[in-house]
Image 1 (cartoon, helix red, strand yellow):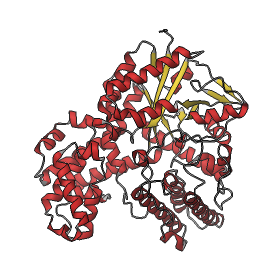
Image 2 (cartoon, helix red, strand yellow):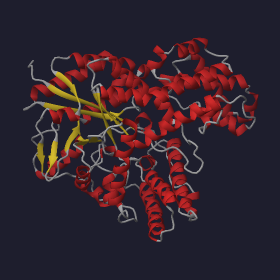
Image 3 (cartoon, helix red, strand yellow):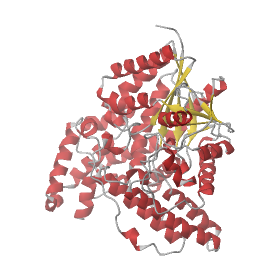
Amino acid sequence: MSDKPIKLVLCWHMHQPEYRDCHSGEFKLPWTYLHVIKDYADMAFHLEAVPGAKAVVNFAPILLEQIEDYSNQVNAYLYDGIKINDPLLAALVEPSVSADAERRLGLLHDCLKANRDRQINRYPAFRKLTEISEWIQSHQDAVNYLNAQFFSDLLVWYHLVWMGESVKLTDARVQRLLAKGGGFSMHDRIEVLEIIRDLLSGILYRYKALARKGRIELSVSPYAHPIMPLLLDLNSAHEAMAPIAMPKLHHYPGGDERVKWHLRKGIETFRHFFGIEPTGCWPSEGGLSQATLKLLDECGFKWTASGGNVLRNSLNATGNLSPGIHHPFRLADTNVACFFRDDGLSDLIGFEYSKWHADDAVTDLIQHLENIADYAEREAVVSIVMDGENAWEYFPENGYHFLSALYRRLSEHPRIMLTTFSECLNQNVCVLPLSRLIAGSWVYGTFSTWIGDADKNCGWDMLGDVKHTFDQAVAENRLDQHRLMLAEKQLAVCEGSDWFWWFGDYNPGEAVSDFERQYRLNLTNLYRLLGEEPPPYLALSFTRGSGEPALGGAMRRSNQY
């Protein structure tokens, strides 16, 4: 065994799309606050717990704004009694249960959205509540026989099972409620909301404090998480894919200016929350093209990153396969260093290690890293980039044992140096030249997750329609400054990548329904902001799901198997 060192960058991407109805302000889906109390809290805890831990933490700006909104709303309820504009969170502290059968069935449905093995079955008391809920769902005329105590216990338990493992281990209030197990009072429900308030109000400061101490590097994505290469040129999808069906929309009008808007707004939002300028940008879904890299360069970013398959496609196009992926590269005529994700190692964490004992999984990862170091011709930089929230519910105890062992053993390893992308550049790691970049993303190295399918293409045509209407309203000067600002932001929401991710019948039916309904609502709201009647097709569903992808479709493997 050699003593050659290796640099390792762990990059966690924190992202949720805009779930608010811009017309009513209501959160239509609860995933932002649920991921705060579970995953964002746990990820901060593990970094705080190990002094030698180091990582890059990337935030989507639209997520930061939603966290702030939730924090403000919960505080407004607790101090002034102002209703929370999220139906599930509001139900937690409603003094009485609605007599409306549809509302009651909706609560049962919402409180079943948890991982069966890791969240529901772990707690016998909650499992029994879910079994009753499922029986009621198939015997809906019996829903009004459920009393107020049932709903009180269901709502408290649902939020308890969504708490991060670090919260369960360190918060005496959570421990008391878990031990009580049922018969929860209004006081208990308020206490749960107070715990959620504390997590919401403190989470961004915790990451900011870690950054100030040099323990993490904070980075940013474009404001509303668009696929920048496709906004710039829909035909960039052809660079890494065989001929595919394309939308009727030949090009997205004004795409260049829209990408610049997302980047400017993203930097501005990041600066507002963290008080610093971001040095790096994780492009939405790792989506890069040569034109995108040049815009990132113009914005002053020093680094960006993408999937390993993007590099392989790019090297293959030039006939140069020798360098490998464990080095940063720089495209000719740009100043942005581009790091490429080790897709195999990232997928091991995302899809496989949840089935292993934590110590065995970390040992396996370390062995892979040692092998890379042994065979590297020069000092390697390995990049593991993945979602910071979606994988952990498939691990026992939300990945607590895996992440604890991961940070501890990596920080103690004599050859593995945990670092950040900016530190690598400041230490003058070798940045190799790249003569050409083939456009693609971290998923398969292509854009097939967002374009090329009939339903995804339909989504693009709808987006093109509203963009033409937006451009006409602007050209005719029909919007005052305030309304223009609102319309620009709502257009950005419509341009986000998540809607297109979920369109298509290979995804789970309920997720497809939730996201396409939200997409149609987003487009409808934009038309109304523009003073236009929404087209009739927005009243009709245009995609359905019937698939059972790995991990519910929230993540994708890097390669198609």
